[in-house]
Image 1: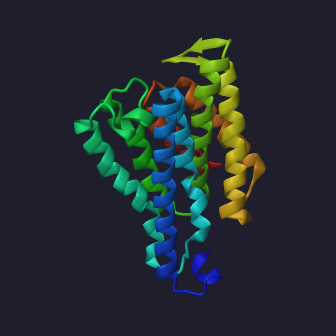
Image 2: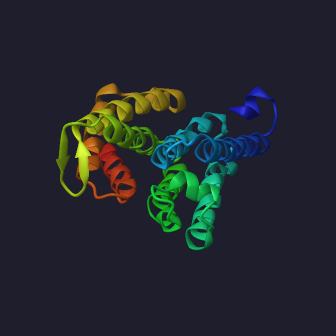
Length: 234
């Protein structure tokens, strides 16, 4: 944690950690917007890179001291984006950064669906489920598993199936692999004493089933709910 490493108060350490999350997120947004507008990065790719990047924000949690209430400032960046997504989803211009990198088609109203659900889930995981096994696995599964799966499925998926929306077996396999790998890494990083490979393996499998059966947009809600419920039962 920063307060220990820098020999400062837990409150100041947590404030610095929170500032770093803002630098990270807005830096990522600016970089992806540049890639979309100047280098032709497809919006569906930028959208999922944003997804992965947002899910990786939990990597800042080890910087926070649990000794002070300010540990909950870790969700400040998500609260800010809740407000921004509502504002941008209703009023943003077509060339807005968020519209460029977080939507599939350039329709600003998409910001009020998947991206909005994501930040709501992240806020819950950073407060009610702060540094808990269910919260960490929910975020890594959503960020990495559901972030990588559509990219692999769209560009390399050959074996298709459909429940409520079109999916591919290649995409579902990548969902499982990346949900598992990211969960192992971040649980080890944040709460190493709770690392349980078999438990994570089962949760990744459950999340993959849910993702494969979910309609578009609502998977950002259904996946973390399924993971959190299952993690408390297993």
